[in-house]
Image (tube, rainbow, N blue to C red):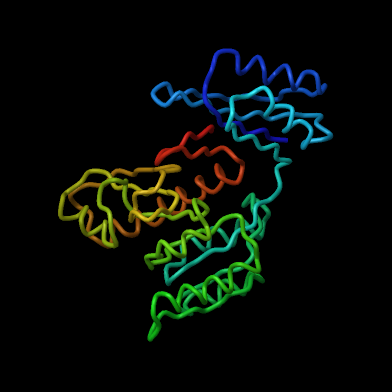
Length: 275
């Protein structure tokens, strides 16, 4: 069982928390904590064994913490996710494979595409595929159709696996900080839809990928994880894209693992990540 705590920092917090847990007669398997000194914020993740009444423990911990503390006692359920795609298959293929072999750490409910290209591979894995085209539709109509499909699945997270559409602030209000995107650059460098072209023109020696939560600011949401790979002057645009796709897949997979295991805390526009 995982216990997640986020609150204002003060002296003696860990002692207070562990005292509550000791009285509940459970064993601390692991503990990770961090204090943001500038913001005076405390973050902690406990893995515990032996808790029989998680709601009672949650209430007991809240009583010994500063006002406004966020506490979650989570028995490691599999999260439910919906994946949104366009035409590129590499990230979706990895998600489908991990979901099939029960290594995703989540339960894939469905895939929604704004093109039909990935319908076949999705259905080969026995996952529903919904086509929502954006041609001849307003953004409001397009996103209303998306929402009508998504909500009945009650997902914990939406995964944008190379979904090449910018979502409106109105849509994101329904899924605040629950949308994870994979961007094909080492943000904040090369924001926007064509980072590999920008990287080629700039002559960079590394290219990267960034998994982040989606906010109203394009490609500027809280970063979950990033990975880079070396490149050089001999790389063509196609070389960069091919190498980058593998990096994107690995970066998104790592980010999902961290989020699904409740290892990611969001504060302001930053994250605290316990690996």
